[in-house]
Image 1 (cartoon, chains in turn red, cyan):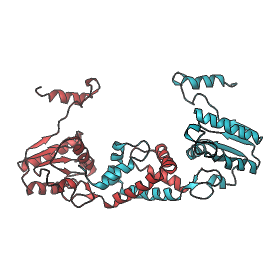
Image 2 (image 1 turned 90 degrees about the vertical axis):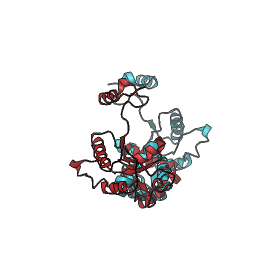
Image 3 (image 1 turned 120 degrees about the vertical axis):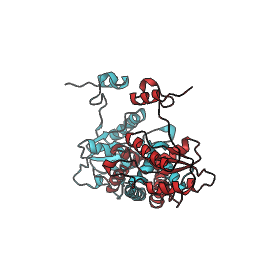
Image 4 (image 1 turned 60 degrees about the horizontal axis):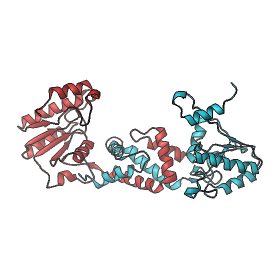
Length: 198
Length: 198
């Protein structure tokens, strides 16, 4: 019907959200227009502010609206334990799920030579500076358990080794609440080989 | 971690979208911030414009940014067939799915006395004006096939009858491509009773 260029444009713009196709975007647009205009206005405002003001933390490269993020600026958090993650979203989930009180370093990616992602793109120079700066007693390698994430963890472990800092890797195995029957064989083999005293 | 009031606010604002919970909102926020800032900025702009400028068509009450919507303003569409629907989204889907070349009337709801939704709320006075204005040779009742949608269709059929205009109802039955085994019994009984010559 070519109704309202603006309505159509709104639906198309909503498709830029991950996991949202034309059908969901349509539903969202009509929902906001018919039932929640204030919510839509508020979302527009916050979205614009966030896109302009959120940048990367000077120290750990996570997303923040200030020069140094809240975690890095927090004096009650341990400076000597560093958790290295692939993305800012990982910082968020680890901080919500665990009682981790140390600091983070965000790679914004993983080693992937074929895609042209090497140590420079991951801010390894900044990481080395950080390791050289103060005494760090543990590096937690919390990259994903994909092949590239594992390779990145190995690479980081070597750097830690060079600086004589012990590196640990988050545990891999059967997810909590998971039934063995439905776990993929790779995970199961890994969990079996990595069994621990009970 | 209380990271970034703004990031948190963005995640909360995204939750105003239908079907989006905290997890999806988190994913969307990080996606926009890390990979598609331009998309985020554009969405913010279009959203704000849409919330301010899209209102209801003077004639058919659908959503439009102009006083009269494109369908009503289109001289090549038949003035004498009127399709009555519950929401502006229905106008959109019917126009995309069918070859309908008539005009619409949007109720913005359905009769629901318990919720205080009566004929006034559905713009029936405007509809009656419209029916009195020009010659209409068919009214298509395309309200939903819920109990309230059916009741609304009956109510509208009486109005059409009063104006001596034939009213038709969209067909109900087994969806195309549907397997009988998985169709609910109400639909199947309806489809069986309403069988037509092959």
